[in-house]
Image 1 (cartoon, one colour):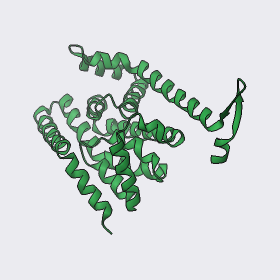
Image 2 (spheres, rainbow, N blue to C red):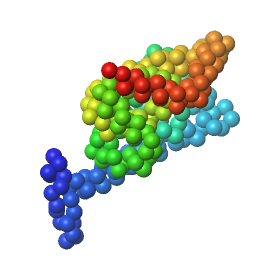
Image 3 (cartoon, rainbow, N blue to C red):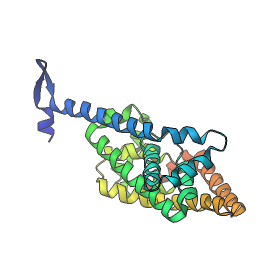
Length: 245
């Protein structure tokens, strides 16, 4: 494959490597897909920030029938691929729309699909594509994790801890030697506890269990904030875990 990528072809009389053509086409396809999904779900995102917008979105998506599931999948896709929507926002929306179990299942399916999409794109386009979005610090950390020989365990733990930049990790893991199916299994099992807690609490807000949901969300918020504040310390613990023999 590497040999084919380095083969040259002629474009308007100029020699161009086949690998470079593939990267350009792949990047264009990536931008095109993300732009299309963004355009489709933008009315709902915009609606959220209007007075009574959340209720309007819930009614609109529920009344959309099967299309509502696709709308939620699209939102989850954008949350991971573009990462401009907080993960908790889509999880709570899923819980309010479809309850903790069906809503959680839709979010998990969206996470699997979007993670697979990112993995394939990064695996094909390589490190230069990721360097424009991820700091050198994170790339160096994952190189260290890979050298430790415990990358699988580390990835699972990182996706299990609240407050970690999981969307950044989704772009970094494909640069390692980890296989896609292993990454999808470990990362999404790690996401399940957070997804279930968020969707369950959000469902309670709609079903009338308001105080119970407020307590759960408050605890979840405190845990997430603590993990964010002590992120460097937690990363240090994970790195030491990887160095143990």
